[in-house]
Length: 330
Image 1 (cartoon, rainbow, N blue to C red):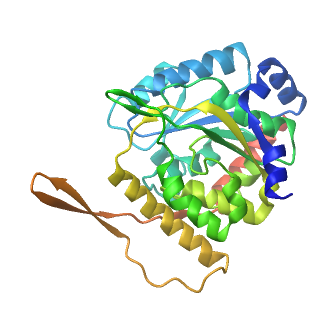
Image 2 (image 1 turned 90 degrees about the vertical axis):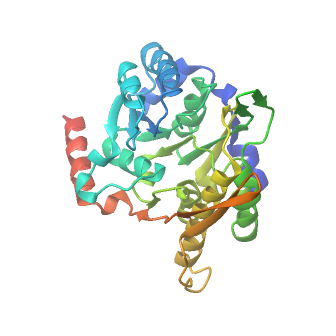
């Protein structure tokens, strides 16, 4: 399948899956269970609305989601209390697989969700979305329900930025266009068919999630795309247009730190795949400058993209899956 064929056959609009009742029937016919995971760190302002929307529409009205879980990295605000109030199963990431230790980062939460959640399909959705709708989940889940060959579905959308003064019509996805798309163009040109490769919303089959490593930080989405592409090819992917995603603005310096982590992951993948010689020793300190009046303040950030191994290599996970499969058979 070439890129144009893939774009024609594996790119969807969420409206194609408007009939949620039909989706639920097909899910039941295929005997699938679906979990929603929302990774959080201090998201008390938006987590409540997300949970209300998903629980009312995709649990109570249409039983598409079998569980909704919040995996939290140690919020200091009321994120966990709000999430419990609105009916989510709330887990502290440090308490999951505690024998493996705890590392702070979104990728850590996503990895531990593979252990904790029960679904055959896990849909990940970021917690900072201001215009959340049910189609953020249905648009990603549906291709996996209807087409067996699809394993990983990415969201794409227009990304206006929310400022205190209102919305800027466009401007999101800056790290994608400045860093990731040029890198993919050079080394993995087929992956440039993905319109928003860094989107935080995607649905994935468990058989994929348990077989790939997870960087704990900013590089997790990039590594997923490279690893899934390397193992299953472009045809394993699909992408769905969710129209628009409104989220908070991130400062340029924050995006620089994100790019630093992603680049570490990208270079690591190049080395593992034999696409470059052994990497030289690299520093993991990023120096940034912030203008303030007539001077520049200097700050150094240590960003090390550590990596969690495939969950299938964790004995506790293998035992848990045996237990869950046995309980399901009973």
